[in-house]
Length: 352
Image (cartoon, rainbow, N blue to C red; front, side, top):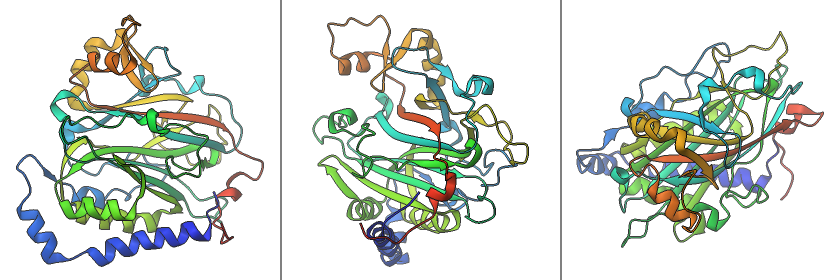
């Protein structure tokens, strides 16, 4: 994937903002004021990118909150049945030869009743390649950090589709992850949702992000090498320090094609990544979700009951379905990459 000089300068500015703001004394003072329900997440983020080797499975580093481990489900499209992504056979994926082009956008985020508050919520999505391309291009990674500020009076978050957040046609607006190329259709994916306890961290993210609406700001990192994003992630983790964890997930191997060359290093037990909606929920909320799963469907990124009255608007139907379950939804589009494959990932310094 190419990125412009302007984007590169923006990335360096984000690094500088975090590095220059790192004040051990201020950090220690903020850490002393952490609420009791927050957990230490600095170590988790420091180890987040330790394992990006394709021949291994998911990163086994300890989660910050095991009970909030991110669980993945999938629906091929609106109105279709929802299934656990681990149960999707690889044989059902499209037979794409070569590299796979993946477009991904956040669709919705809705906290369950126990997770609703007026605190800022951060949704972080990481996607990475797992091996270099012909020993020429180091594995690259993409990341986005969305900060959602609830209405102070109602604690309601903005509806993401209402602000065009899930519109993949707006690839250059900063509201979506840029498209990415997975060599041989193999990569890794992680979704994390937290509420940072350190007010300084929230301010850093706000000042280094692009304002989308009054309630949403975005930090979108262009394709950078895994070592570079590891440093950035560790710095952010140190500043976040403690957080209330909503969803917590290590990098998980994924595959977007049913065919892969024999000489391609394959991860262990990759999760299938077909086009459609992915639904992420915390492990702690699985019981409530499972009891309602046969009745649920995805509509515009929201979980709703399939037999819900159509006289109700979508937001009302979403509020009535699994009220105790926190979830986020992503929309994926997977297709064959252009003939030049991962050459499109090589950084360029052309002017915007």
